[in-house]
Image 1 (cartoon, rainbow, N blue to C red):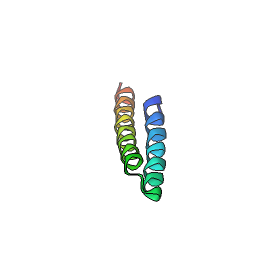
Image 2: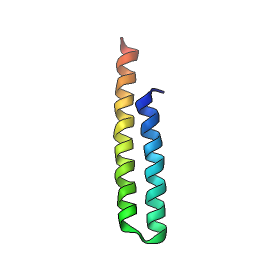
Image 3: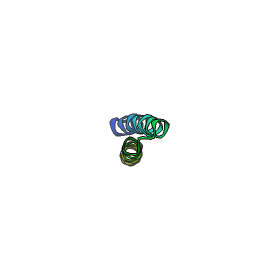
Image 4: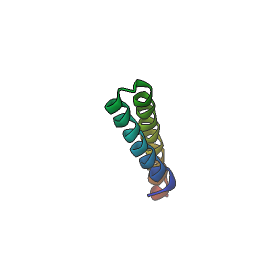
Amino acid sequence: MNKDQFEGKVDQLKGLIKETTGRLFGNQRLENAGKAQNAAGNIQEKVGDSREDITKGS
């Protein structure tokens, strides 16, 4: 697991916590921020996956 994959997973977890908290308390802004952070974490993880694939391919 490289740095991008790890940080992506961490951002996904933070986003899920924000999203769930926002939903629980009826805070739409917090829920949307959580969804955005989760999506950004997913993208960062995919970048890490690509880097790892390139590294393994060399």
